Image 1 (cartoon, rainbow, N blue to C red):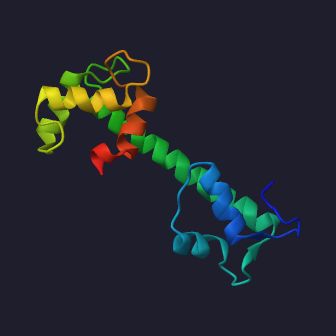
Image 2 (spheres, rainbow, N blue to C red):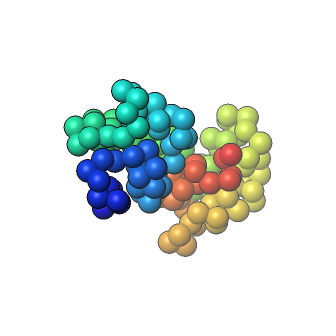
Length: 134
């Protein structure tokens, strides 16, 4: 339950813990600005609904951005990124990651959960979140 202490109010700490459980890491300062606009230090139900809708909108925009990025890498539009496709795009962007096919293969191996030697959309999302592109 989000209101962990049952006081009918949702605090910054409770929201932060809930978001972290969902895998959404938002800097505390930004979160405070989002949820404590009136300076009360807590959210009521309507404020929480607004916050939730804002987060869902942000997530939807992020998913659309990730899909667009995936489509750039998936040059033949088969739903998978091969070693060659990864190398081609990274080389065309002039990025140091993926300068060789061997390096691209290793990048794929780090996220290739199903072991098919290619990256599907979910694996791509993990690749973009991971240390490979940080």
